[in-house]
Length: 253
Image (cartoon, rainbow, N blue to C red; front, side, top):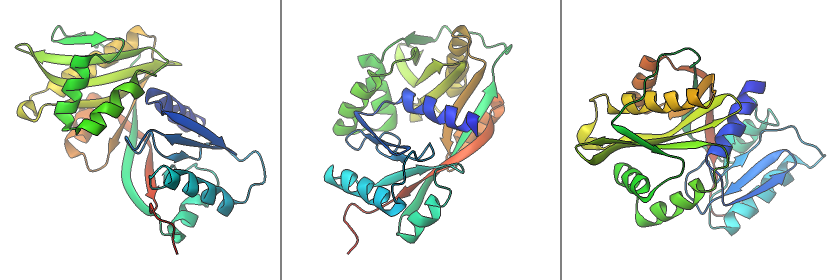
């Protein structure tokens, strides 16, 4: 359970929100709608007070709806309280985006760097453009993404894999407390299934080793079969899973 909470904390640091509110053991994050992770309630810690659960949920609902966003809760098997998932289901919240959190012991692994890959400590315009192109981001999503990543505090590595001068794969890593997290790894659709994502991942793990990381972690949705195969082939194994409960933008009447 302690390692679960630690990885959840590390992943929050790896994608900062624009605004954060702490509510009796819950962390509420707001980022203009960019990604569920940056716009959700994270019930990570036991309550410090005696605030009624229904009232806490109601406060969250009002705050997110005031932003024009649906209330979303990011849940694990150790969310507080243990009844929260059931309570949200009874309130009509829908389960979405079941995600596998996987880890790998990188201490002692032979992970050579690749000359095809360029890394920078901050997201460059070239990196942001490549990610937007690979992910088919619209202009609004592209505008939100960059400023969030600029706020990352721990050491980070933003990697681009080039082929004949063109950036065809991108991803980033964040290192803290002996862990390196891998995020946003993707390959241009024209170049998939050729091992480029694997090369980029290994390079980011190599960078993590240089930051004294002993363990790597990543998050992959259960529907992403190619990515699941890639990470399994590299030795990653599931540590735990999380999922979201999505409410309505409009109050229930």
